Amino acid sequence: TPAAPPPRAAAFAPRLYPSAIPAALRRTLLHAFRPASPYWTQSGYGRGHYYSYYGRPSRAGVADDAVAHLIARHLLPRARDAAAAGGYAAPVGHEWWVHTRPAGGCDVGHRLHFDTDEA
Image 1 (cartoon, helix red, strand yellow):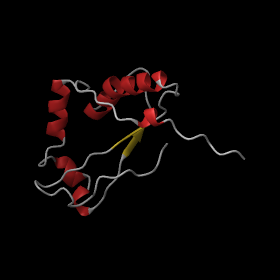
Image 2 (cartoon, one colour):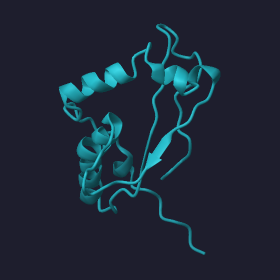
Image 3 (cartoon, one colour):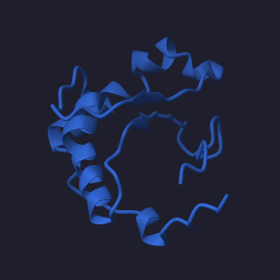
Image 4 (cartoon, helix red, strand yellow):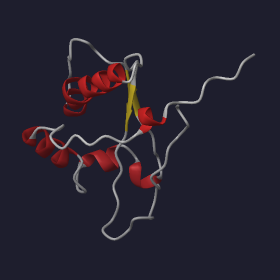
C-alpha cells in the first residue's frame, strides 16, 4: 500500500483573523467563562475533569448558545474559505474547549497541548 502524501505545509500555517469575534459576542464569551463563572464548578474543571465538545457544522448557521453562534457564524465560514483556497474539502466537524489559569500560573493544571496529530 503506498504511503499517504505528506501534508502541504501551507495548509497548517497559522492564520490571524483580528476581527473574527464581534465585540458584543466577545464580551458575552468573556462573561460566560470569567473566573467566577458557574461553568467552572458545574463542569468539574477544578477536579481535573478536562474534556472538549465536538460538533458538526450547520450550513444554516443555527446556534442555540454563544459558543455555537461563534463557530457557526464566524469561525466556520473562515475555515470553509481557507479549506477551499487550499484545495481541501470543507470541515466536517469542529472541537472546542476552554481552560482557565490562575494569574501567573502558566503551567498550573492542564497544560495547553494538541490531542492528536489530525493532519
